[in-house]
Image 1 (cartoon, one colour):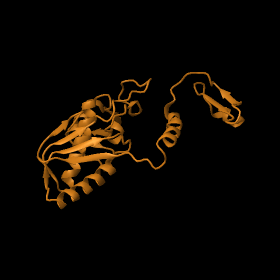
Image 2 (cartoon, helix red, strand yellow):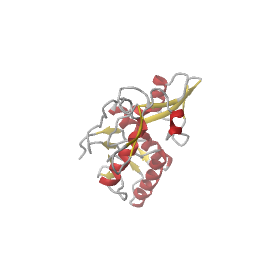
Image 3 (cartoon, helix red, strand yellow):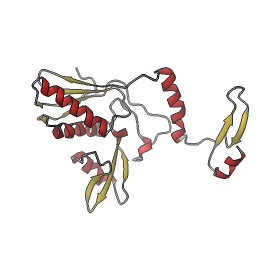
Image 4 (cartoon, one colour):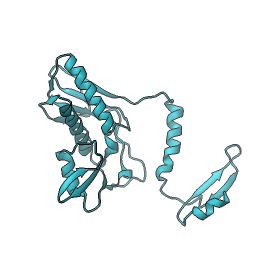
Length: 219
């Protein structure tokens, strides 16, 4: 424990206690308030394991109506990333082709599963770690972009660049590349996810003839 002191800075905080009796073993600025940052992952992981169980899986649901509109219902999956969307899109296209569906009309995003979660202390900034949580979360509600000679490129090389990303990139990316937090706008969150699914449907041979519709209580 003594060796830790040389690594601690003025604004750092560290408190170590014995779990059996609560006795404090080491205290450095333990009473000082600060931004917890990634240390929140520890109690969150513990709560998830003890409440949901280690076998719990988040789901994203897909429904097709008689007019060939596709409903995507988000249910809080925090790891709905590009690679997962690619796999889900390919599987969905295969299943649709098996029942004779080669094109769909509108893509409807339903994010009614729970209200937007705002953790105390979160500020409205473009920094990625200030992101809000929604039922429908794609790539952590961030865009990893860079600008070169006026053009916008994705730094997530498996993520295709679309008009939404170009619009956001030109508005928020200056000289330095990085992740842009889009979670402060529900419209941004839903448009980003819908258009990314649309991109991968096209890649896997499924035509989308309609538009993206955002419905908090889709039937």
